[in-house]
Length: 533
Image (cartoon, rainbow, N blue to C red; front, side, top):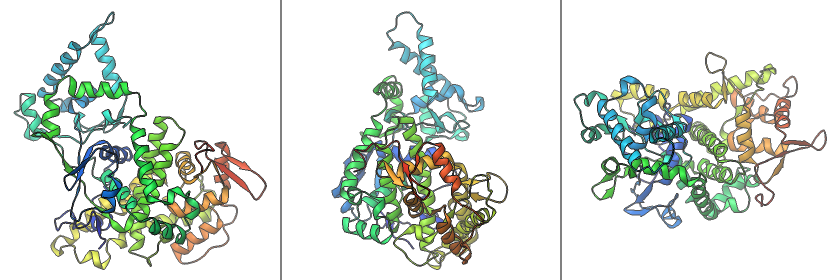
């Protein structure tokens, strides 16, 4: 069984005995949407945190703490619920049958409190109030079909990042007053913010605590040395720069938005905030789960990619969209990389353990199309087999064996991989048979932004880095390796060019410069010359 990070935190309860959670950590979950992975990651980043009662407010733990993490000490963070802000923003667009009387009454009190603090000339206060409601409704990120409190904002600033809150409607039928209703909100069920973002955060911590010589040896052995700058191979430098970059990310939005959000949530009516976010005089902490210690390689790649996206010269909304893709791609890479360790010979390079054969979007090359379909099935089987590894299987209680494995496959295993890949557009079709891997313009833009450390790279190197980072196979040599992994048979002829469509996509985006028939450069438009040092 994988060793957990933080060390010693696996419990013999029903959750940690689930075979997929044993392998991948607690937990990646199929019901968590792509944006909710990012929201939860940033929720941990902006919240006050503590380890072994040592508190800190920085995005990442201090390096001294990372390098000497106390045994059996959880990472705890204090998320803000922001119930007032969610009520103000989402209640008017929520379903009628979810609008409880106590919520309606409190919203009216909240509106009155906000208007009483307005100093306006000309326009009516009610119009300004409606404008503010529409403004924050425009930042709705996920959960539009859920109760207002279970929805999430697009995380453009710290003031809009909130923890999950679930209204226990069936138990609150006789509730009349808001003060009483506050006891019927649950903040620790992890139904939608289902710990996936926590695992991503722990993966960053696990990676950045590695020794510099360990990272260098891994990069050289796995063919990733040219993928990093000299500084990026130093986890101490990477920790400091990523900490600063995440701070800058949360400060990129105009302060007015965050200040308005904070005023609506706490300034206009403080009782809700005190009741939901604090326990006595102390912040109300919640504990993170754990991730596999051996998966630090995937976490290190993720850390480098997040830093590059935070530094990219794009606007805030583009950056958040790219970070949303990064989080989801990291979940896929974590599932495939960890599964490959338990179904293949151990290797320092997780990308050498699997391949995703990418077919052209139109599916015109039938040979590549068939290999791509076979690689989807092979990934499914690899994850399916990995959670049935003997070391994991023996820890699954015999009476619950069938139930736990069914749940593992459906929620945390190969079906999670397929579901998430479809949401990203990495697998088509969304419904029906014949699933295969493809590349969308959105995914291609993400690869360009994260794989090119300077402002340009040769086309052949770009393809090689896509393979070493994510196992993506585009050209004849990579597809040949993919076919050997999938079927055991190495195919050298594919009935025509396999990656012309990729060149066409890059050229259409204006980022491919052809120097000759055999050489081309891929340019990263979001990376200035001074950054690629």
